[in-house]
Image (cartoon, rainbow, N blue to C red):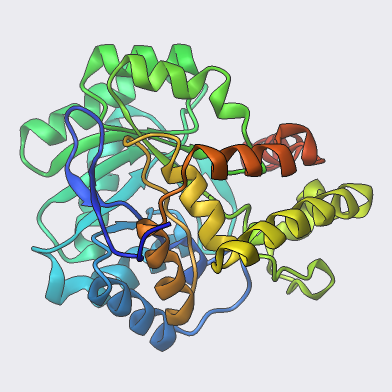
Length: 333
């Protein structure tokens, strides 16, 4: 392993160049209990100091709070960073969620995001989730018009299956596919990752640390009432017991290499290809420092084989699809 340093990667054939490690900002506004805005701003600005140039938000995170927070924090650095936001999930002030990919609404959602962020151009605009009631071609077509007008730089899509990804890319160039991908959730490798690579689409794994579990410090019994991991089966019962064994194995490998468990997990993702840019989320500046340092950890073939032997796909228990399906069903109610 080399001395940690920040490196740059390009998002797909058509996307921008960004830091190899980005920052997922959802947790600054929702999902993991209460957050402190002052601490969040300090964390975002510390990330910039460390060479992180890729920041991920969405109109739904905190019902717009996240875009305002990230926009304010990064205002002095707008020319230095790539900011991604998303359309397609609508969260009302009471927290109720719905999907909205209707093309006639895309422009208004984009303009509201521009206002909240405080910019005249969104660098990367994702379709957050495909609305099952709207052909993806119609939503992407409306988003493509925003590119033509200069309001958006590049388009991405989140959590799309392989056929939908191909349909989206046939409508307009897609720079990035975002999906949950980590050592403990490998399903995208079966079809979505190969499809993206055939199409020249970059890969942005969210929850690359297994919603914090691969960092080795998660204590499920201490989750706040507002922490959505309370409903994830991977954090409960026999699944948790099995997964704890897996993360302990990973931690022993990390210790032998003199790095943290989180750094090893991020370096593993980076080693999956030059087209991979993980976006771990955190509220803490010290965790940003640790995560950013993972960009300089180079895993060789022997390192990767050691990880595969210790924590292969069968080392983990629990299916995130049941959790995601439950949240989707609830969101459509």
